[in-house]
Amino acid sequence: MSTLKRFFQDTIIYGFATVLPRLMNFILVPLHVKALSTVGYSVNTSFYVWAAFFNVILTYGMETAFFRYFSHSDKKSLVFSTAFISLTVTTVIFFLAVFLFRDHLIDLVDLNPDYFNMLLGILALDTLVVVPFAYLRASNRPLKFAAVKIFNIVLVVLVNFYFLWLVPRHPSLIPDFILNNYSETDKVQYIFLANLLASGATFLILLPYFFRTSIAFSTEIFKQMWKYGWPVMVAGIAFVINEMLDKILLKEMVSDEIMGAYAACYKLAIFMTIFVQAFRLGAEPFFFNQANKENAKQTYANILNYFVILGSLIFIVMVVYLDFFKMLIVPNPDYWVTISIVPVVLLANLFLGIYHNLSVWYKLTDRTKLGMYISIIGAIITIGLNLWLIPVIGFMASAYTTLAAYGTMMLVSYFFGRKFYPVPYNIKNLFLYLLISIGFAAVSFIFFRENYFIGTAFVALFLFIVFINERKDFKKIINH
Image 1: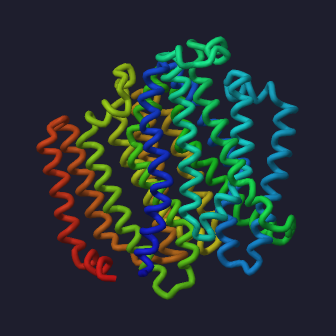
Image 2: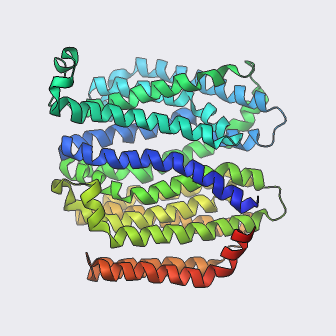
Image 3: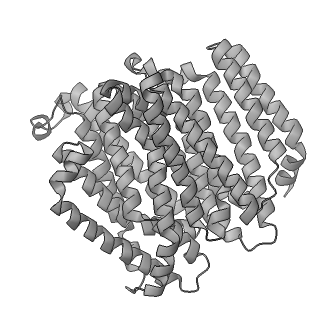
């Protein structure tokens, strides 16, 4: 099997593990926007903003560091146990600190104390399974990885539907002890409960992996992993700022209603985020495993080329059929006030995906500090432009800021990569596909909104251009 075929095969499996959960989320968004007001959706969004922030701190780059050292180490068992022990110990320390400063933290995150307790439970369980999940990816077990991930999200969906659909609509089928404690005014708690139950079940499934290795801790390996991983943690915090701060600022500077509507319409970028995440899950271990091969750089260049082609196609399709997708994903008209952000955040997430592909240079050369600095640049742009522009143009400021932040990170990473780890990217092709897709999407959205005949013609024309330009490479991949 060719290298590219193996990459695409693993990416499809990882993609399925990512796509199915996201598609389940696709199902949950309509359920949530029907069950919750925009204010309730704002609470839901705030919960997961803080979950993302604390998750980055609790894992402190250990997942990426694990890939880096597990793939090349002849003491794989020791790398596994060291990573697992370090995460377990730091998680315990974190929760002791939370216990001491609990009231202050509840005020900081602005969550109901019961929600806060569920947040802590989810964080603890998810942190403890980071290394087992990373082990499955690093040891090329995508099917096992996918099965566990899919089970997790199926459980989340079932519990959501049980409490948000079945209980209110068919109370005769529900046991009395649930009906007697069911809250019609606080439905958002059931979303968090679903996540907590799924995290607990996932932990139990992966528990056997905790006992497959001897309990051994290497201070030397930990120091190496920490040195590699802490800049990844800082970059992760910056990423959370880039991805989540706009919601918090809109809540504080505009209103809960607008923040809830913005967060829901942001979900319309779901197919782009699925694609980016799937590519990232498949690419990260693949990049490390290919690093020492003779044609590694050309392989990386080819992968980015196909990424941009597929990402550009998703971008055009989502913009052309936006009004169709909004009826499926966000069926509550109360949320549509912010629908104009969608083309901008779609393009922003495409730029983010390109950045992830370009980041191979600092991960393979152990220059994670430079990657951290790039993410910090993005965070500074996010903070500065949001604070400046939200009072001027409202919620659109957050969409344009996200585009500016990810676009800048993409460009800076490319120019740094040319210096430290030059990859022969076909810039002419990449620029061509991006320019055509942006042009077609803009014309369709501005001048031919809901004209699906012209929009479909744009999609077909883009595919034709790609086929003409790439037909020789497509034949090579198929014939190998």
